[in-house]
Length: 124
Image (tube, rainbow, N blue to C red; front, side):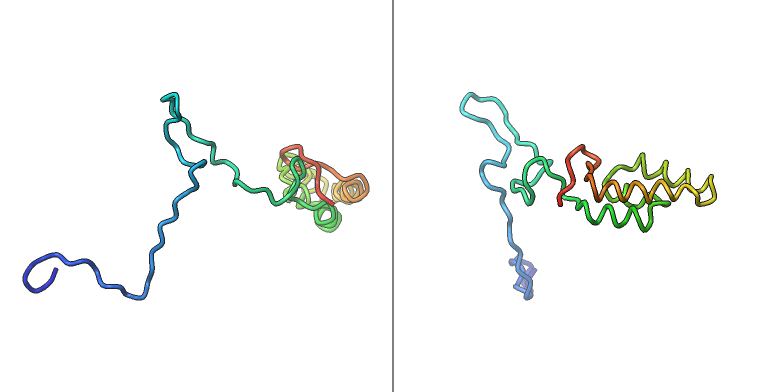
């Protein structure tokens, strides 16, 4: 408000606001038949990796599994939390001897590859 009690728009303060409007094909609305359509927004409209290939690296997963396999870190990285927790529990229960499983698992991941938590093959 100014001195006369009237509202006035705020003055620029060095900050700029930008309205980001999604492209027309990503907006919800009615199509020509009158039914409501709204696209799923679970994945971005672009792909960084080929379709069906994981964004996780086989080499990183294998090295993590070899070095920290007793903790299941490689499996956690791949998104396979169930196997990672089982490896961690086996290692704790066997006082660290279960780490052999992680070592062998890491070598197999490097040699044969593997799949991530969604079942997609790991990229090279």
